[in-house]
Length: 406
Image 1 (cartoon, helix red, strand yellow):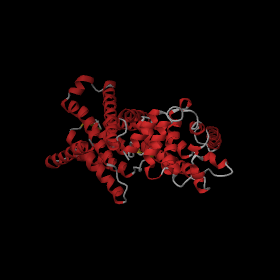
Image 2 (cartoon, helix red, strand yellow):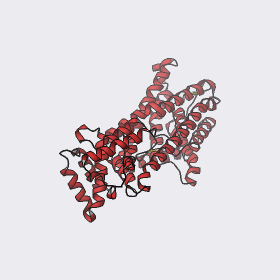
Image 3 (cartoon, rainbow, N blue to C red):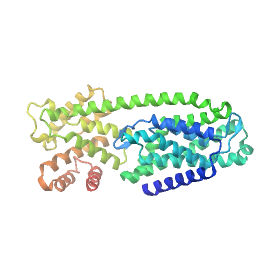
Image 4 (cartoon, one colour):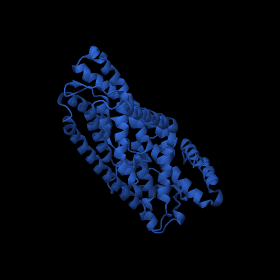
């Protein structure tokens, strides 16, 4: 699927560039202005935060808004424009690649998925708008009043839906995560930065139609400031996660748990959560809880051999879990994380799904480490034997699938 989408986007971009170069650029000043805007947007892009392995959906919102504005541009300063779909794709593709060159030079260029989505979604928006406008049918249907703006909003909504579907398909093809939860998360993201990008693109197109190209810098500034704010927010979130990771390593440094145990449990928990279709918000809670699930062991006078809490009596497991939850509540992380840590030792029928996942992933890592060369099979067998009370059967089977996929 990735190869097919990339091939289609690449072929479309190459054909559009060739056609535009052969027949010449229509309204070069307008094309240059939007090309510069898109390139600047790409230059100002950020690397994108990662949530359980998924890269941020729109690392270059200013570039995306400029591309949409060019696709929806009907007039400039009261004069009709005549650029077509192929020129739009050519300008957007060339400007995106030009803005990505400095990032590529330092090893941080845009992902293939980002480029594919940019070409295909902008092409979709241009196909929905430009033929109707250039033929005069759009004016006959809606005129130049409020219905014209409504039609632009409809095109933007369809384009956003197209982008969400395409993004979920590409992530699914790359990671094999369930498609339904991926699409749900993509649609939820439209309420945030996605709606800001779409609204700015539409406002840019309408403003240029009235005021000309001088409207571009005026209406680009708010989104650029928003982008800078998002970058700072992402940096804070990264620092926040690093703090949690450092706190989770306290048990390893103190000798209560083996090196890398918390990280392995977190990675495995997130993989199982993805397989079971958890939302992004739940995955974040799951990751934080998995990193800090053993923090209660710091209350013990003597460390447990190999830090294997799965082999302790149930009452002792619950005591450690409750102490861990009390510590987590003092760190300032969301209370949902503390709940997962507190309830990880409860019978699975009384646990939220996130706590079931953490308990199963923790037990698997401990049992597989203690069981020698046959650790993986032995651990899975013992987990299956414990599905009557300790481990949820669906979580154990999900973990088995995840382990089988490497």
